Structure formats: structure tokens, C-alpha cells
Amino acid sequence: MRIPVEVSARHVHLSRKDLEKLFGKDYKLRKLKDLTLPGEFSAKEGIKIKTKRGELSLRVVGPERKETQVELSITDAFCLGIDPVVRVSGSIESTPGAFLIGPNGKIRINNGVIVAQRHIHCNKKEAEKLKLKNNQTVSVEIPGKRGLVFKQVKVRIKDNYILVMHLDADEGNSAGVDKKTFGYLI
Image (cartoon, rainbow, N blue to C red; front, side):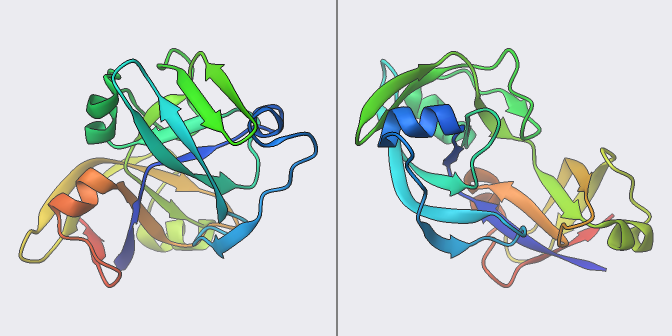
């Protein structure tokens, strides 16, 4: 079974508290476009991440999260002088921090800057069909002129998920991923 592949560019998920510090009290994110996962969207808003070495722009992804989390590529992390930590989204304990700058304020997060572990989202029905289990680690081949095999791909299963593999920008570019790319479990 083929699995659609998407590239996830650098972005930030903000907690309500941090959203208000960066954008103002009672601020509501404005939807730019829906993302593949139900309920998630790319917001019109953006912020900057700043370290001693430099700064980068980040797109805000909604809805709000319990904790603020920044997702970068390894190249982004090196540009900022951050020691990259690969983690499953949401697992931010003992990860680097940084300054985040919005139109109404600046905050320091003590942790939450990660390189997202490459992963597959799927619902229970698709998981059964593919014989996958939640948190299983698999390998996926992406064919093509720059074809690659990605190992250490984490499986994430939830009822409302849609089958899709997410790579960061470094990984997607290295495999020549475009909007019509599919991967195959091996």
C-alpha cells in the first residue's frame, strides 16, 4: 500500500499562555489553510526564533497546544547553534530552549525545540490493513531519481488520523519529495 509523503517545514505550536504573551490577551489564531491532519491548520501568524547565533521565521500551526513546541530541521538547528534533539512530537523534556519573538512580546522557552522524528500517521483501520502498531518503528522506501530508504520511522495511530508520512525539510529535499510523492513500507 502506498503512503502519501508530506514535508513539514519549520514551525511552532504555541500554548495559550505563550500565544497571549506573543500576540496579546485573548488573541485568536487566523487560519491560512487546513493541514492534512483533521483539526490542524497553518495560521496566518508567524514569529521568530532567536539564539545567540541567529534567528529564523516560524509559521504558527494551530490549534493551541498544552505546551509550546518548535519543530526545526537539523540544518535549521545548526544555523541557530542549537544541538539538534530528534524527538516524537510532544516529547519535549530535556530539549533545548530559545527566545521566541512575536508582534506583542518576546519570551524565553526553557525547552521545546526539537527535530521531529520522521513518522507515519494512520487510523486504526489503516493500521490493521498495514499490520502496524502504535509507536512501532518501520522503514519506508521513497522511489525516484533521488530515492531513499528512511529507517526509524515512528508509527502514530489515532482514530481521526489520515494516512500520511511526515518528513522534515532536510529529509524531504534529500529524497526529492514533491506533492505527488508516495512511500512504501519495506
